[in-house]
Image 1 (cartoon, rainbow, N blue to C red):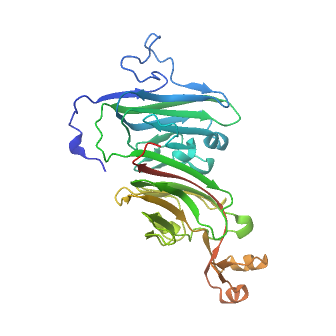
Image 2 (image 1 turned 180 degrees about the horizontal axis):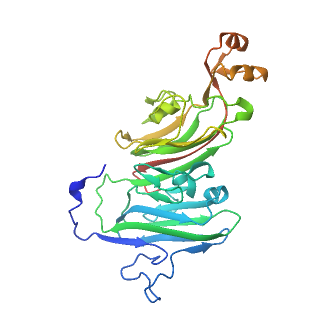
Image 3 (image 1 turned 30 degrees about the horizontal axis):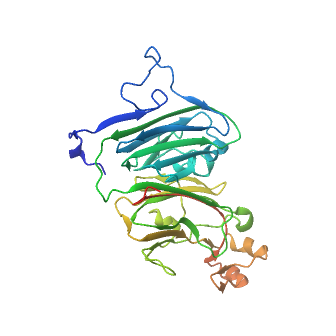
Length: 354
């Protein structure tokens, strides 16, 4: 992933800058300004509804290379209520807009310990991202406390270089967060609504709270990931074979974290799952448009079919009805359409800053 031969090179006219509470402007020679040079301003509080610019650059090109954050309150209300937005090259519309937890792969308002190629949280107490985010003229990263309570402490570093020269084919980083609770029967969940332009789908993280009240503890992840690329309409060009297959494992999803794929939360008591896949060794390019969806399909088996049959609920897959009595007698396995609570953050590069 890293080109070690590049470590010894020092590019001309490219400079390192850090934005932090000790130097909000990231300006040269401006850190610890107005103090005696000691540790005086490592963090700041945020009232409910307050907005704060974490980093801003104007009239210069550059690349955001690392973002680190930790906050004092890491409960579900704050993880989902605190919003992060990113703007490139003067665009009025944010290229990134997501809850802080979900953006950094802490889905469902829950922290998790994990490490991947792009995001990490070494002890489940922090937010780290090392996705390169280039800009040509300006950048701005903003957080808003959209929760109903005050945050006592917000710590962060945004590490960047300025003066980088970007080729014409260098695209802008984007992220889109979505949630459907519940999803709809026979309606694929959209991880990435249709986006026009050229770019690269970088990957996504997904959170699922399975509806155990309606479907008992039956398996929820038989859906297939579908990529509609460059004019695809009814049928996609790319299609996987199942949810757990998409993240590189097999049936019976457990907890694990690796460089490009993982399920860093697999709570089988609450039936809550968070997982990710990053298309770094296997790029997904698009040149006109892209749309990414996931089936809402589960599986019944010998341990759940009798419970589902007892509810009188009709199961079906597409237009095919399931004969419940025959299924119970055969103790067979089968697929069925279902609804659950799904949320996701999709990451991609696009040829436009907005």
